[in-house]
Image (cartoon, rainbow, N blue to C red; front, side, top):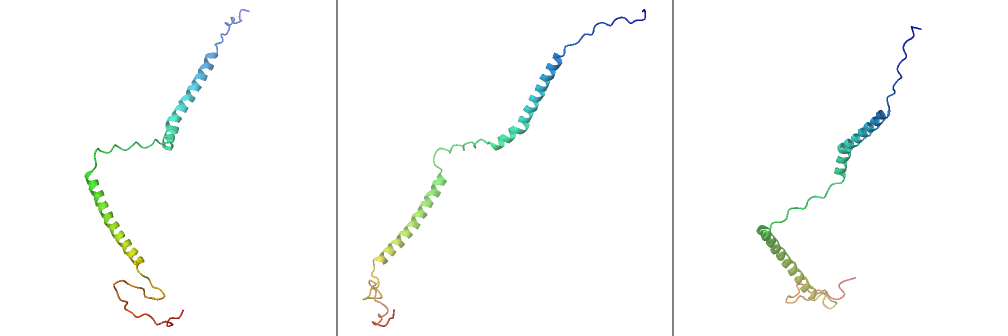
Length: 129
């Protein structure tokens, strides 16, 4: 019995909870880093393009009227007044023509004030309807 090996010391079991806790924390950390990078690299640019902010307001106009713009506007107004005057003259001439005598059964050529008819009226019964 002298050849029997000495008894082994009792095995010490190391606790497993630090490995499990470390694995869980490391996994959550990797998931969080992956989500953060995904948001920063992919989701944020897509949302920024899809939902754009309104354009900034234009700069305020300088105080006082612009002399060149006023001159151009006055020229345009004068041209429009001249065009309106021509149209008003045409309307007045057309109204005068409406007030003038028109042809009737007695006077088929109508009366033109101040002007004698250049043709003689047709004799009665000369025109067939």
